[in-house]
Length: 253
Image (cartoon, rainbow, N blue to C red):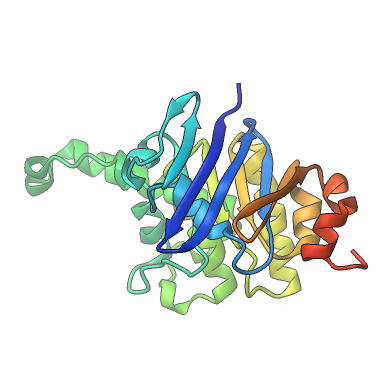
C-alpha cells in the first residue's frame, strides 16, 4: 500500500482554481518531486496535504487513513513534517534552540512539572539538547551548534530549517524549494542531504526549480501546470514527455 494517496484534490480561492482534480500516490522510502512553472499550484498542493489549507474537494490518505482537513499539529503527530519557501527561523535564538523547537510535540507539556523544574523534565531537556546537536551533525552544521541564528548565512539557515523539521522524527517530510537562493556549492550540499534523509528511511516530497537537482534525486516526478496534473513518471519519462517540454523544461531539456 502507498504511504500517501491523493485523489481528485481541488481547492478554489473565489473564482481561481489553484489545484484541480490532482491525483497521485507516493510509496514509502522514495524521493518524490513536484515541479511546474511559477503559479502551477505546487506550494498550494503542499499546503493542502500538510493541513495549512482545507480542500474544496478530494481525498488525502496517509497509510490508508483520511487526513484531509486535519490540522498541521495533528499531522505532525502522525509523522508529517515540512519546510517552507521562506525561512521560518527564530533569529533571536541559537541554532540548537531552533532545532529543539521542532521537537516540541514530544516535550512534556505538564505545566506543574515545568514550574517545579522536576528532575525528569530537566533530564528530558538535556536529552533534547543532545538530539538537536546530533541532528545538526547530520545536516552538516556541527560547528554551529551554539551559534546565534542571526549570525548564520542564508545557506546554513536552509539546512538548519531541515534539521528542525527532522527533530519531529517524521516518516514523511515535505521540502519546499530547499535550494532556492543557494549558490552551486550550497545546492550540491542540499542535494546530498536530501538523499541522505531518504537513505535514512524518511520519505521525501520535494518542490524544487533546480532541474539538475530534481533529475538527480527523484524516484518519481509529478508535473503540475495551471493547477492540473500534466504528467507523472520517472525522471527519464518526464524528460522525454513533449507536454512537459513545452510547458516547463524548454525545447532543449
